[in-house]
Image (cartoon, rainbow, N blue to C red; front, top):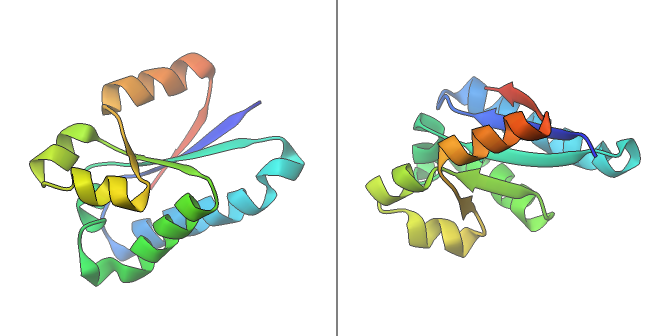
Length: 114
């Protein structure tokens, strides 16, 4: 099954909003199109997951998790910002970026960055 990965890195409103919105729109059609979907939030965007000023982004990410979409963050950044427990409580998974991006390359995933 082909996989699409939405990689959200930048923490500006446009990147956070467009990346999370596109992930939701793909979630809506993934089954009928035979696609797998994953979201990897990294760098400045990962820090936005702990910032209440980005409530729209956080609500969108929580909605994706609730719908069964695997959402990952970098475990190193999660540790650095003391977010591991908060992420686990929200159902956000953690993995090293090197491992996830190597996995994406090996499986031929399409990675779309924001």
